[in-house]
Image 1 (cartoon, protein in one colour):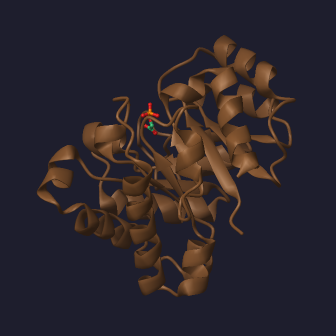
Image 2 (tube, rainbow, N blue to C red):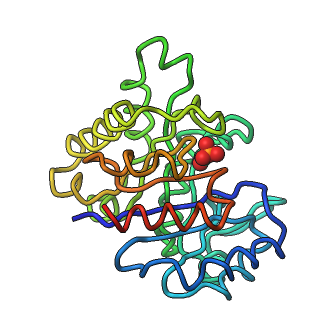
Length: 252
Ligand code: PGA
């Protein structure tokens, strides 16, 4: 049995005050971490304030980090600092970072290794553009992203990872992938992992779907065999919607 992971990706939204208000609203209503892993990934300057207010149920994640220990990388955040702040998760390779901030399959791979060195749980984003979907090459495209992400990662380390399948055409557009489309690629990702490692590893890795997930579609997405949670942007900003979605995972 894989535990569901429901993660909010707040992107560059919410001030510190708004974030704290959200945490106060949800803190005693989020289910235990042992039933559902619930996470919100916030802007770096408010990580510390959010971690201080987390209970045993809701965890705080970062949205990015650098792959080097330290150095002259103006504006970047190190994994060592995230660990010191008691951040639990980190999103790696979100399509917005791949498209706008030069994130590549190689940096994604380096960042996964770095996150694991510092006890951070990576949420690794993969997913195709509309152009690739229409060309019919989604499977090959996503396979290439997954294989490159996992280069040099041991079987034991792989079992700790969380993948997020996020078709770019579904992010922030209100066009969610149907449950069948979402399941098809999540299953493909599990098969790729089985081919790279073994069945046991593939069965342990959690695979989320992301892209316009909201309270109206989360139940059917989570009902799919290979979908173990969701990475949620817009709808995760609202406390009531976030609570609905973590509880949807509890009901599965
Ligand atoms: P969305 O964003 O839920 O607003 O589509 C998802 C994401 O970018 O992770």
